[in-house]
Length: 545
Image 1 (cartoon, one colour):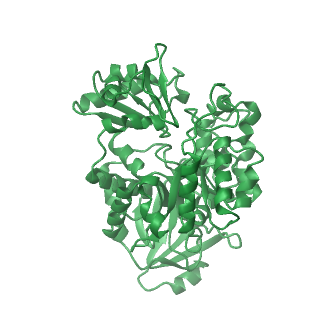
Image 2 (spheres, rainbow, N blue to C red; image 1 turned 45 degrees about the vertical axis):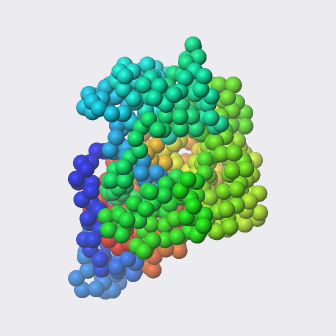
Image 3 (cartoon, rainbow, N blue to C red; image 1 turned 120 degrees about the horizontal axis):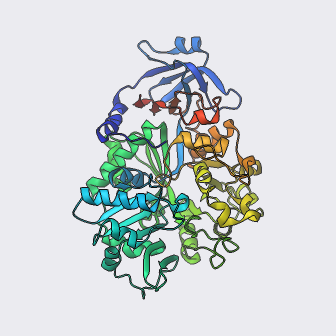
């Protein structure tokens, strides 16, 4: 399902943002409004940046201004704008500009990819991201010896897809001064070989040990990455995203791109603690274009399940010595939460393990002190104990979840969790049944960042090739109406924007996604074959196939 786009073609998409402003009449195919009382319509009329009318085609034609652009869907299906409730925009763009390892399917294919890149780029350090070993035949992490084979004496640092571990070459470890005597920082692990020497794998906070051996991207590179990421996302049918762990430089570039009309998606930003000074001083903000908003801060409670960094209440079933990692000390986390509450900023906390989720809920309950309208979020909410699940709705906490995680993790989660607590994982339907709001996203570049995959995973809960284990709790799959709401209305609600977005209704902002197939009716495998054919943001065409 991964598609490659030429850089020039991708960047040309953003220029379409200025192609049309005025009346647009959409008709000629299924139109799903997302409104329970009127779920379908014959036509949508857009006037400038707002939806002017939704309903009967004849009435829409009568209301349309002379010279309105007529969009005949020819059987394609229109939806409220799809929004990725959890993504990392800079990472999406940089993935396209650096060594992309998301197709590696073994240690040896990773070695081959690094060797080919090293041959093509003979000078300087090598950075890449996207590998994940859980389905590899070698059944192990890569190590520094693998990288040394691929690029002898070169500094090489390769990030795991989830962003919670890197593997570093011998030269990289030496440049960073990491030896067998190096003590792992709190919330991190340095994996070691039989002789006690570092094997190259650095987990969670230990990744910081090698951060200075790879030069950071220049402002020009960041600008190119963000522009490219926006164009790529528009081409996939996304009209916006909730952007996580954002640095202050990235936010400044996004604002500049939007002001220059070179970026056309809606972005609700949640800043990392290092870049949170502005929002913690002034509270939520919106730029002059209305596209770039700052909503709050993003914290990390624990690591990832695949690298055994997720904080669990009981030891890992396949590693009884490990309970995972707590990444944010309590005093630091609670202080940041109190500062956010004081200015009305949201808090979004990464929590994957059942212990990580319990701690996040406990801290929220303490700081919010009964305020159920703050819409604080738990990102991933991946493994949640039975007794903690009802607390999301009770506390007004949004469960920001990524359906694609479930169809990738199904290959290793049973081993990590064991049969007795596997039901705690990826509980979309349980959350909805409890009354909680579930906002669906992709976590790209951890995952591909494709709305079709997220919709497919939510309603079918099988891998992309149709596999699901017998114990994979297929009863947690949701209905198509629920999946649509999770990917449209819920991300808007999660960012305090549901009055303006998330459904096709008169008066709301004109954000529309059109796919070549009707996701609401085709067989599940056909969902993955639907193409995004039209993306409209703020009444402007930002992608058209």
